[in-house]
Image (cartoon, rainbow, N blue to C red; front, side, top):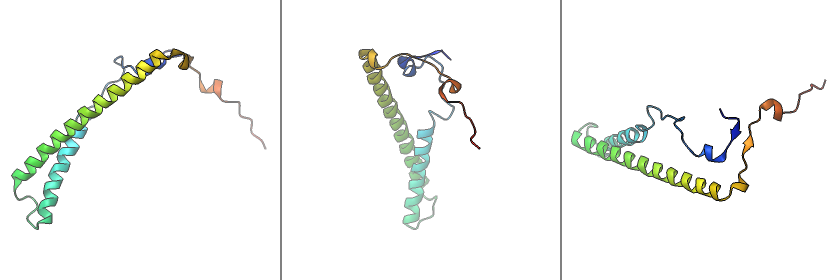
Amino acid sequence: MSAVNDPLELLSNKGNRTPTFLGPLWNPVTCGLAGVGVAIFVNWGFRRPVLSGIQKHIAFGAIGVGAGTYFDQKRNEYLAKRDAVLRHYIELHPDDFPVTERKKYGDVLESWVPVR
């Protein structure tokens, strides 16, 4: 940990954050399972056997995986654009974001004296 809090450091990833194992898989897998669930629900609604028409389950699952991947890409693009705008604003207005020294809880909190 650095001793100084620089606002631009907070918006940059210098290799100190690694994605989790399920991070890139979460949206596609969840949307794929939701697609299979939709196919099961449609079969149930038409009073057919739940797993009949397996090609429909595969198709809805594939559409769900594609939609989850698309949503993940759009979210990453949005977050990257937002971080770029914030970084640019901080670079243009450095007076509004001064570099601050890190403080410990002991320096910030007042000493506690019990009242009895």
